Length: 568
Image 1 (cartoon, helix red, strand yellow):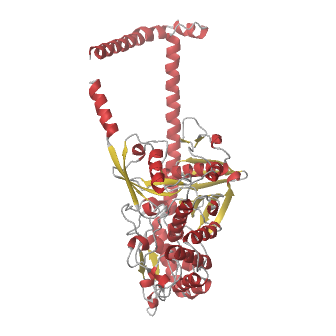
Image 2 (cartoon, rainbow, N blue to C red):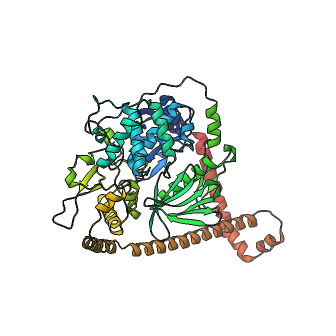
Image 3 (cartoon, rainbow, N blue to C red):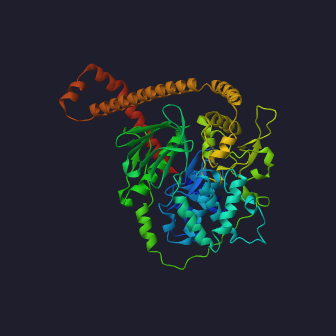
C-alpha cells in the first residue's frame, strides 16, 4: 500500500504542465513545468529567453477563473498558484516601474519598459494633454518606422497607426508634423530614450489602477507609483502620499486602509480578493521603493489580531540594491529585435481593432475618453465582465446618440467584445452601457474630455434642452440601481459576519481552555488547586465513567494501527 502511494505521488510530481507567457511585444513563450516548479524557475526561463539581466523591475501576471488578477509569487509553486486548468496562460509585464527609466543600464531593459509604457498609453492608463500625446506618439513613430520618407509615407500616414484609445484628425496631423520636422535622424534607441524621459514626467507614470469606492460611495482608482500612493478620480489626482509618509497598509474583507502620519484613508474594493490583491501590491511597492536593503523586509499581517487576517512578505530585492547591481553589469550589449509598427488595416494585433478615423468625419465627434474614466462607472460590477484570455485585441466601436433629428454626430465609446486583460494590466473590460452612462453624465456636468482641447469640447457641448432630457434619463437609471439599499445591506452583512466571527473565536478558545484544564487535572501535577478538584465527587464520576474508558479506547486504536502497519 505504501509503495502504491509513493508511486502515485511520484507520477504526480513528474507530470508536466504546459504554460504560455505573452511577452510585451505580443509574442508568446511556451514551456513545460513540473508540479513543484517554483515561480522563480519560470521567471528565470523568461529572462534567459529575453537576455535580460535587470529583471527585478518585471513580473508575471495571471488572471484566475474569478477574473481576479494576481502577480505570480516566485517562492511558491506555479501549479499551486494557478486555480485554472492547464494549459496555463500568463503575461510578462513591468511590475515595478523604474524611478528614472532613462537611467537603466542596458538598452534591452529600456526597450522592454518602452513597450510597457507604450501599452499604458494605448490603454489610457498614461494620461496626458494633447501636446504631450502628440510628442509621445511621434517618438513611437520615429523609433519604429524611422525617418519620414515622402516616398514611403503619404499624406495622412500617421492616421493608419493606433497610439491612444481615441484619435482626432487634428492630433494625427500634429503627430505627423512633429515626426517630419523635429525627430529626423534619431535612432530607435534615442527615440525610445526620449520617450521614456517624457513619460516619466507625467503624473500617471507607473499607474496600475485598482477600482474602489471612497467612504462617500464615489468611484476612485488607487495606484502605487515609484514615488508614492495615488488616488485618482476621473482624470484628477486627489491624493498623493510619498512612500516615506505611509506608515501602514491594512485590509479587512473589502475594506482597505492606508495609514499616514496624520490621516487614515479608507476605501472599499469590489471583492475581498480584489482588496487582498490591492494590499499585497501596496506591500510590495512600499518595500521595493522605500527600503534601503532587502534585509529590512518584514512579514506583514493584515490585522493586529493573531487569529485573523493574512500574512505576506515581499521576497525580492529593493530598488537601491537593483541600481547598485545594474551598475556592475559588464557585457556586450545584447542584440534587440524590434517589432516595427504595421498599419492598422493589415495587422489587428497591433491596431487592437477598427480605427475611429475610419468613420466619416460628418458622423463622428472628437470626444476622447480614457480607459480610467470608463472604469469609473463600473462600481461593484468591476470584476464581473467575462474575460477572453485568448484575444489580443481591443475593439473601439462607434455608437450614436442624439436627441435632435437634425444632428447626425456620433459619440465613440469602448466595446468589450474583444478586450483581453491578459494584453494589459487593466483590471477589467469596460461595459458599453456603463461607459455610455458615464459619458452622458460628463456631458451634463460640462467636464472636458481626456485628450482633447477645450475648444473642441465646447463645440460638442449639448444644448440646455438636451442636457435636461439626458439628466432625467440618468436620474431614472440611477434610481433603478438601488445603490443605497445595496450599501446598507452590505454594512449589515459585514456586521453580522463580524459578530459570528467573534462568537466562533470565543467558543474555540473556551473549548481549548477546557481541554487544557482536563489534561492538567488528570496529570500528576501536585498543585493545591488541582488537588481540590480531584477530591470532588463530580471529578471522580467523570474520571471513572468517561475519562478512563476513553483513554483505553484510544490506546486500543493506536495499538491496532501500529500492528497493522508492522504487518504490511
